[in-house]
Length: 192
Image 1 (spheres, rainbow, N blue to C red):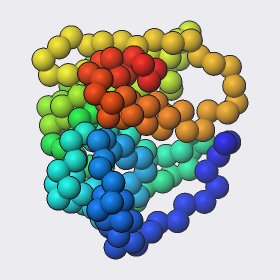
Image 2: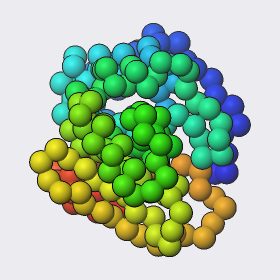
Image 3: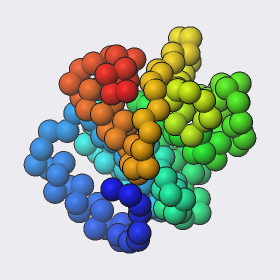
């Protein structure tokens, strides 16, 4: 629960066969990705979305662990932009990931808005920038869509040293609520 200690990248064909084993057997209502360590793993997600006509994709673009361990190889951001932006329902980067994907250095709230604007212009349908890495009294996640005003989801910070996996947890909860048929804003509120 405290840290990532090692990362092993599975061969692409093993990932494809794992997905086929699940997707050939079970009806999937939503997909949530976490660490996609290589461009090939991103390609496999795009393949699965298209070939199995999966309706909902929540992309949590995990690039580093909370403790700072790098989790992806070069060109993963580019592959996510090219292959997943047009397929996703929601992307949920934290501040560091949003900066990396957008090219906008985020230091204040106005930078969050600018980064989200860039991500929407690049093809994302909805962007939830998680604010757990921002300094302040509250963790404020901000939802941006092309056709609605920004929606903020605020909660008090929980004083704990056990922060590993918090972003993945909220993204998974959002995907679960979307799979149950909740509308995006409601799903995020329930997950938060």
